[in-house]
Structures are given as structure tokens and as C-alpha cells.
Amino acid sequence: MKKLSSRLVNMNKAAGYTIGINAIQILGALTVTAFSLFSGGHAFMGLWEQMLLSAMTVIVCWGAALDIKEAVNARKIYGEADMLEDAYGKLEQLNTTLRAQRHDFMNHLQVVYSLLELEEYQSAEEYIERVYGDIKRVGRSLKTAHPAVNALLAAKLADCESRGIKMELEIESPWETLPVPGWEICRVLGNLIDNGMDALSGTPDARMTVSLGETLQAFTFEIANNGPQIPDTLMERIFQSGFSTKSTGRGMGLAIVRTILQAYGGKIELRSDEEKTAFTGTIAKPTAVKPR
Image (cartoon, rainbow, N blue to C red; front, side, top):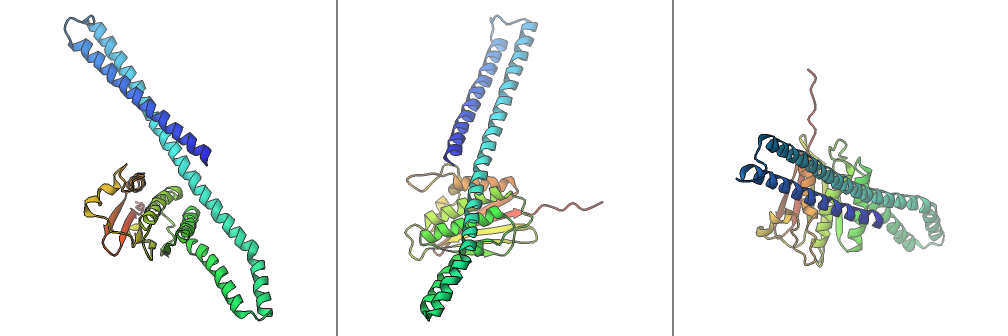
């Protein structure tokens, strides 16, 4: 994980340098050409010289533009690779949890059986409740058609539990035909849930609800929490790249969420009052092509 993240940072820097250098190259070529063609008394005044200079400028600008395009594509590919690795890591974590539960199943039965034989009924009941709670927590997340989403929700349930946050899942649709790749919708949901957990820091009786559903026209989701109200002055700025209300400041998560959703024809809205803050998103369903 650290190795890929380090490589991603280097690629982002390299792509940034490439874009910057080639942009300067384009600007310089256009400046020289304009000066040569339109300033009086310059050496390049003949028609052939002007045509040659113009052709060279076009070639230089075209090559630089191609370099910029490739740098942007490379940066995007490495960004996608980072998201894929994160989704794969959560899948591995969920798989490990499920294997551990299967492996421990017989052990749990033996413990319960022994407690019942010893007539330790209260202890048996408490043991069953603990085991059932663990199985139920994982089972609640295994309701969508996307393994990566299931893994993400299972991981976030555990994160919320460790922070003392009560997280409820309301999955009313498996999202079977969702047009967004699993690893990208994980980026959307993950950033919104992380944002909610940060907002709930220090909130008594902290609660979060994650709802997934669909209508005839769109897939829907809502991430809501009972944290502090977001002021009206920040409602739109909160989605801007680089904006953060934290002193440490990351400010990229919500901007990424909006960018991904817009790429697939979706949108996100924010509502916040004294009772709850809710991020509500919709993703339009692919239009079926009717036979002629």
C-alpha cells in the first residue's frame, strides 16, 4: 500500500511538471511567433520565413499538447489504480472476516454446548449475543450486488463501532445495474462516511445512517449524521477542491465525490439543520435502447 501510494505521489508530481513545462513551451512558441510576424524590423519578414516559422510553431504546440494530454491520462490512470487497490484491500479484509467466522463456527457451538451442559444459561445467552452481534454486523453489509461496496460498508461499520458511533444501514436496493464501477462508488460512499465520522467527533450519542435505494429513474443514496449543523455560508464552498473546515485540512474528499458523480450524470445535495446533516445523491439509470 505504501509503495503504490509513494509511486502515485511521484506520478502526480511528474505529470504536474510535464503539464507545466509544456504549457510554458506553448506560450513561449506563440510569443516568439507573434513577435516575429508582427514586430517591424525583425529578421523574419519574408513570406517563406513566416510560413516556416508558423509551421514550426504549430508542430511545437501540437507536440506539447500531446504531452499534456498523455500526462493528464497518466495521472488519471494512477489515480484509478490507487482507488482499485483500496477497494481490493477492503475486499481482502471482508474475506478474512468471513473466513474467520466460518472457522470459528464449530468452536462457538462447542462453547455454547459446554455452557448449557454446565447449566450456565446466563453465560451462554451472553456468549450467543456477542457472537450473533458480530455475525449480524457483517451480514448487514452483504446486501448489494457489488462485493467492493459490501466490503466498504463492513469496514466502515467496524470503524464507526471503534469510534463509538452507532451506524445503521438501510439497503433497499442491490444496485444491480449501477452504471458507476464498484471501486468508484466506493470512493464516493467512503469519502462521505469518513466526512460524517469526522463531523461526529465529540458528539454525544453519535449516530449515522447510510441508505441505498433506487427509483424508476435513478439510484439513490443518503449519508446522514446527527453532528453539528453546517452554516449556510459553507453549504456550497464545502464541495470546492481544497476547502476544509479542519485545521489540518485535506479538503479533497467532497470535491472528488462531486466530480465522480457528475462524470456519470449524477448529482449530490447537502441539507443541514440542528437535527441532522444529510448528503443525498442520485445517479441516473442507463437509458434502455428501444428496438426500431
